[in-house]
Image (cartoon, rainbow, N blue to C red; front, top):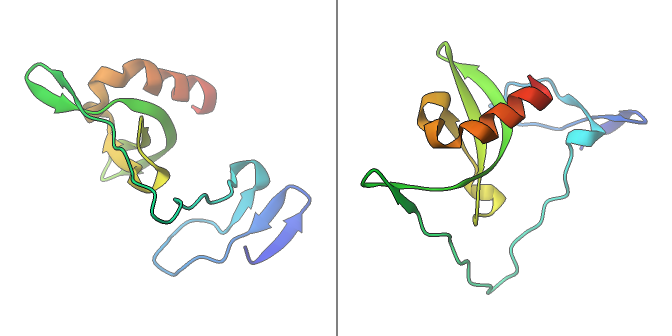
Length: 107
């Protein structure tokens, strides 16, 4: 955090490689929780759907347009935040309800 702008907005100190507006609402900020040193990470196993391995989507965290296609930042069930990844909408066909919930809430 660089500085507090208003009671509900802060300016972030970001590297040059991140091209977003540095001022964000406080509701978007979460405290970072580091994994306990020495703790073994139990990763969730994929489920098999139509003979392919798939992972369960816990929540859609954000949305962006990249190369004219929508991508969603996916939080995976059973994984820590560092494992969140951007996936195209076409790759989330078995998580349509989760995508629809995000769209209904944030549009």
